Image 1: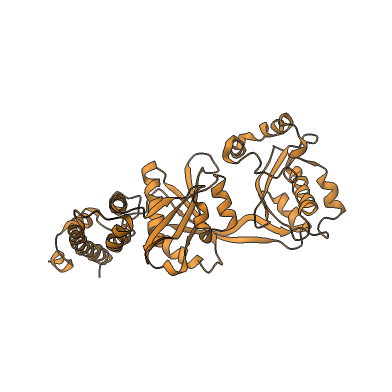
Image 2 (image 1 turned 45 degrees about the vertical axis):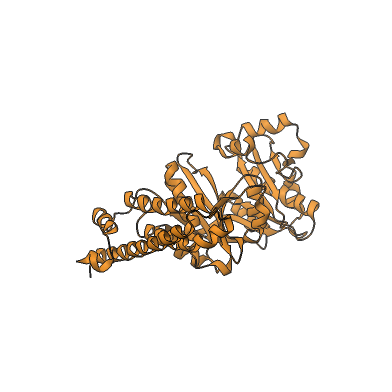
Amino acid sequence: MDLNVLHFRKVTDKAYSIDMIDDVLAAVREEIEGKDLREFELREKLEAVYLDKINLQFQTARLFHPMSEFGRTVLKSALDTQKEYEGIAGALITLVTDDSIRKYKPLLTDDVMEDIMVGKTQAIAALRYRDGAVYAPGIIAYDVDTDRLQENIVVRIEWLYIAEEFRGEGIADMLLGNIIGRCIDLGIENITFDFPEESEYAQAYYNLLSDWHFSFTSGISSDFVTEVTKDTVKKNIEAMSYTAQAIGELSEKEFMDVAKKLLSDGTLDTMLKGEFPPDYFDPKLSCVARRDSMTGMLLAHRLPSGLVRTEYLGWGEGSGPALKGLVSFLAVKALEVYGKGTMISVPVESDELAAFIDETFEVQLRKPMIEASLFAPLPEEDVDLEMAAAILTVPGGPEESEE
């Protein structure tokens, strides 16, 4: 059978189901018309029916590439239905703010939660009515940045989690659909999603993103994580650490003198213009290298979990050797300040640094990652969009539309 025919039947089946739900919705609206109902009463009457319709619309949207003309139309219809419900009974998707973030703690890791609190990452959460109360069953966290070439705006989805008892209810589709809808509104065509390849949740991510026409590449994270021990911090690494100096010991002018030499990559400039609060970077562990002709900077932050994460590592032209001093300084000071068992995370962005790390740190971890991307140019369409649109507007069920 022609694959297009199968595709059309899927679309037609969903369109017919949506028509049936619209009939139910009309009956419920007639029932509540003129009644002064409170929000929880409206949710009780309307939410299940509206969610059936919205979920079907998102399922239909997944049949097409969201960046295609028809894909955008179908996705917009799902988002419009969501807004229609929210205008009547209350939010299905809400922005996570500093004031409300504690409500979503069960859905977040400590580091993602902290990134949201300091404004590095944005998040939206799903809300659902069940058993007389409103619950938050799912959340998606993301940031908006430019790619490495500073040419295209990229939305990076950092975290997606659905509470176990709410899985299989279309919540992930709605969260992701809302993000894709925002990207379309803003003209952003580049979305990436990194998640652990070996995670038990990874297959669910893969299935979800495949449905939405994301493509995949596999690789190894550039970050390495290692525990700093007394055996690691030997004389040679201690001696090398003296090529760096803690930013807490520098005047503002001295710090900016180094920063100005590194601003050309754009990343540091953004970070220093308010992306993080002033005390975000640990002044004892963050450091600069400025000896002879070498220039480099490492900015570190200690997460609530205890991991000391490198947020920025940059160096000037010809200053590759300074990286060793910066990482050595981080290792020595992390052990000195936070004690035995402290873990550090450093991005490996040069062969020289990778070799140094391999020689110096006996045990290290690198996260295997899959990156999923939704991007232009679009793949060739497998369906005739005009015919698909016609099928969606045919009154009646699939049997009528096939005649």
